[in-house]
Each structure stands twice: as structure tokens, then as C-alpha cells.
Image 1 (spheres, helix red, strand yellow):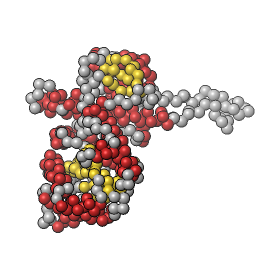
Image 2 (cartoon, one colour; image 1 turned 60 degrees about the vertical axis):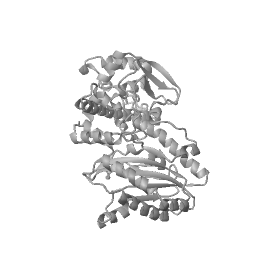
Image 3 (cartoon, rainbow, N blue to C red; image 1 turned 90 degrees about the vertical axis):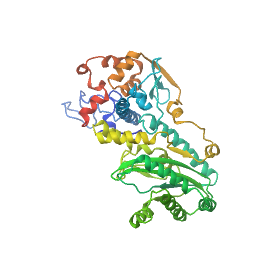
Image 4 (cartoon, rainbow, N blue to C red; image 1 turned 90 degrees about the horizontal axis):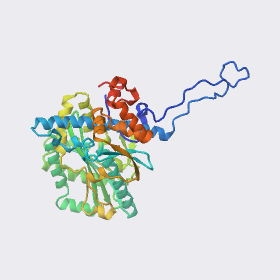
Length: 443
């Protein structure tokens, strides 16, 4: 089954793109023993060298990118079908993600290569800038937001504040609609910070502001929206006392927002045990949260990289639903489309008014971050409209970038030539990832 994976996870490098690291064949050398009779001496003259760390990193990045583009292709298909069903003249107008890194601006598609990191990327293409819908734009946006949050943590300690991680959740059932849950959640968050009880709490803990991240998972109890919040308070604020006060405020807010039934004793007991989690004195690296049951991320990544949680006991991220849809799961298709509609127009990261300016973080939209190019890069060449049409038809957008990184423009030209051949004539290593996937894992 296809699982989305993300940069820095080097546990899947076995399926990286071919050609980057090709070890020399072992053999052909005479032994160093005195008999010279073909027996292997103490030292072999030809030994396959271990892969370099940079090679492994590049292989992992290329594999991750290929899987993201596969998921983007699945999303495009779902949106096209939904758009056609809705009677749109152009199905891809249903959602901008259907056009992302697929439709060109009509002036050719540039292929660039970073001078410092050797990473390749396109120019001249439509980008959606959606952190919710797009498995290609989303991770890039989240990485930029993570940097902003790390800057806020550094600012807090430099100015004598304590960063406190507050996670807020609430009861949910399998039959609850995500759109209604989000509306009630927004109401509860507003009620939490309204009135004199909240003002007294702010004064008590020296509250300066917050950064909030919205996360949505889907599990056996249905949709599970919740928030991870980073609060900046006085350095000596007691975390356990904070948790007790926050729980009381959050319980009242959820009852008034109709997320919690005050007459259901079992539900109240579970709520008081699990609805609020508070961790104090967080740094950008010491708030550890498991990801895929093996990796640990700091507070900044826990907040900003919600979509990298491919799946846990508590539920699947919607990109995992997208992967299931790519395997023909019709229920997963419906769930992902419902999620996409419910999240439209919502921000994943929210900062208290004025906090960004205080911290020194420049305002930038998700769209701007998705299009941002920070490092100097060389333009290797321009793909013609016919070339780009061929690349899209072969589902080879990621593999063109692999070729650029592995061998520059000559490698791209050779890869395009191979794409133009009938599929049985193309070498396995130059077939689109979607073709290779069918041999490596069930579809």
C-alpha cells in the first residue's frame, strides 16, 4: 500500500531513484595471498564502497518527492471527477490543487537546479499553495512555518518568557460531520478566551500570546479535529496549576459550544482525563512527539508539521486517506473530498494579533511560501509544451527532477527520449514511478 513519506525519513531508501548511487561490481581481482590461486587473502582489492550519507539523503528525498507527486496525481483525479459531476465546464476548476504543478502558464516549463543543495525544481507552473489539499505544496509551506515557530521559541527565552505547549481536544463520534465539528470547535475556542475568567487567568500566568495549529485526523471514531497551541507565559508559571485552570475553562467552553454533554458522566470523566495536555518550558527540540512510532520532533515541528503524521492509533492524516483512494478505496475518496470542502478557507497556523511583529516574523501567505525560491539556482533548460505533455502523460514529473539532479540537462534529454519510446522498450529505471510501484507494492 502506498504510504506518504517525507524528507529526513531515511528508512525507505531502498526504493530510491536509480542512477544516483551505482556501486561498482565486486570481483575480477586476483587475491593478495602468496599462492595466487584464487583464494581470497586478508584484504580484498575490490570492495563495494558504502553509500555516502549525501547519496542516501538524496535517494530518500527523491523517493519522498515521487510519492508526493503520485498523491498529487490522485488528488487531481478526484477533483476532476468531482468538478465534472458538479457540471463545471472545466473539471479542474473544482479545486486549484487539480491544476497544481500540472498546468503551465504558457511560456514553457523551466527546470532549475540549486547551486548549493543540488535540488531540482520547476518554474512556469501553476501552484495551489494549499496546506490542506496538496501533498507537494503542503510540506514546503509547513517547513517555512516551522522556521517561524522556532524563531518565536528563541524570542520567548531571550525575553524571559516560558513557551508552554497546550493541546486541546474534545469528544467526537463516527457520525459527526467535519464541517459542523470545525464550526463548534471555533466557537469553543472563542468562548475559552472570552469574559472575566479568561482575563483573570491571563493576568495570573502572564500570558503574552499564542501560536495555534489546527490538525485534523480520521480514525475509528470519525473526524478528530484538535489544536496544538504554543502559549508564552511568565517563566515561573506552574504547569500543573495551569492545566487545572485551562481544563476548567475548556470544559465550560465545550459545554456551551455543544461539544460536551454535561449530563453524560462517562463523557465528562473521559474529557477531564484526556481533553487537555500541557507541557511547560518547551524548546524548539525538546518537546518530543512520536511520528510513525519512531521519530521524535520538537515543539516547532509538532505544531507546524501536522500533515506529516501519516497514521497513528488515534487516526490517519487525510493524505493517508488520499493514498488509500489511490488504491481504489471509494470510501477514502469520499472522505478526502469532504475534508477538502470542510477545510476551504481555513488557516492551519494562527498567531495572536501583533505577535509576529513582536517576534520579528515577516508576514507571508501560504501561496507566497509555496512559490518562494530562497537559494540561487541554475536554469538547466526549458521543456516545450509537447515535452511537458509527454511528462504528464507518463506521470513522470518527479522523475524529470531526479534526472536533473543526477545528470543535469543531458540526463533530462535522455530521459525524455526514453519516455517517447513504447513502454515495453523503456528501461525499468526510466519508467514512471507509477509503473515501478506496481512491481514493488500492491495497488
